[in-house]
Image (tube, rainbow, N blue to C red; front, top):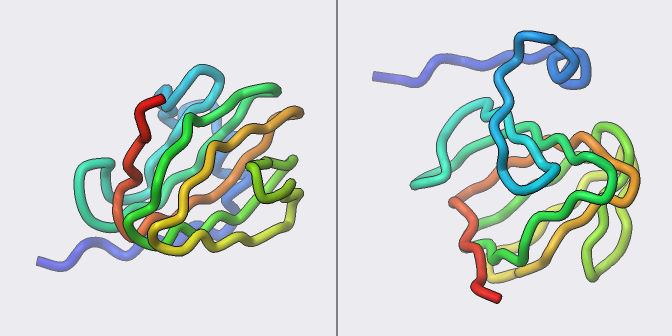
Length: 117
């Protein structure tokens, strides 16, 4: 059976819907999955960062595509403000922060692997 087709015409407007289910990902970071899960295979999600929020260091076994929709996020490689598109290749690792908060669309080829500190 094929997965259903997903069409979202305005991701920012979707993120502002009061009944949209968000789940905690890390302190100050919430996730709304568009498809897939954190266990296997590809997935896509909106991530909403509160000001000052971070995501711990993690590695990408597959490509990670990030589209910054609002605000800016940063890692050790730079700061990426909307409307910026970033592709992290397989084998790359980073920790992510958003000093002023942001909204991003993230598409993962494979689930990320969090690195023990």
